[in-house]
Image (tube, rainbow, N blue to C red):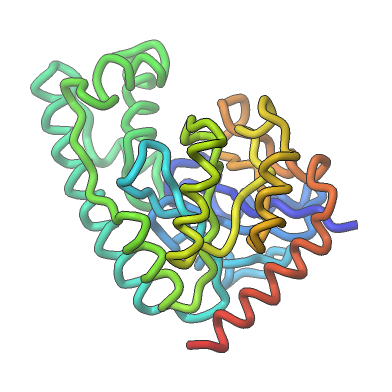
Length: 281
C-alpha cells in the first residue's frame, strides 16, 4: 500500500529536522514516497538526492508568491530545472539580505541576535521562523506567536517585506524548467469556493498542473469539494502534511495518507506528468 507525503520541510528552510533526520522520521512513519519541498531552496532536497534514504524521493521546492498572503506553489521535478534553480538561488540571496535587515531592526528594538546563533538553528537560508525561535530561546518573547505578533508580522516594527514572484511569472518559469507546478494548500488563501475555484481555473490556463487537495488546512472544510473540482478540471491531485516540527499548526509526517483515497492512481498520474515535463526540456 502506498503511503506518500509530498510536502515536507527540513531545516534548510523553516523546518527543524536536518534532511538526514527527516528521512529517518519518514522511514519510521512508514512512508513509501516523500518529497522535500523547502521554501525557496533546493538545498534539503538535493542533499537527500545524494543519499540512500531508503524511500523514493521526488525533488521539490515551495515558492512563496506575492499575489495573495499564504499563496505558495509546490514545484516537483526530475529534470535539471536550471532556469528555476537560478531564480531560486537569486531569491535565496534576497532572503539573506532581508534577514540581515530584520536583525538590524530587532537590535534597535532591544532584541539583539547574532547570525551565528541563527545558523545553529538553520541549515540553509534564514527566515522569520528561525528568528522567532531564537527570540524565544533568548527570552525576548514567550512564544513564536508573540514574536510574530509583536515584532515580525506584517506591519510590525521588525518586519521587512520579501521579494517574491507573481503566480503567472512563477508558472511560466516552472514549466520552462521541466517541473510540475501544484497549488499548495488552497484553503489557506481563505477564499470562498465561488472565488477560489475560478481563480484556480485562471491559474490553470496559465500553466498550473495540480492542486494539493490533501493538506491539513482542508480538514475543517472536508476534501470532497476540492477533490471533485480538481478531477473535473483535469488537474493533478496531490497531498502532504506540510510537516515543519512536532506539535505546531502543521500536520504530522504521513498524516494525510489516511484521507487520500486514490493516492496510488494519483501518484501514478503525477509521475507520468513529471516524466512528460522532463522529456519536454
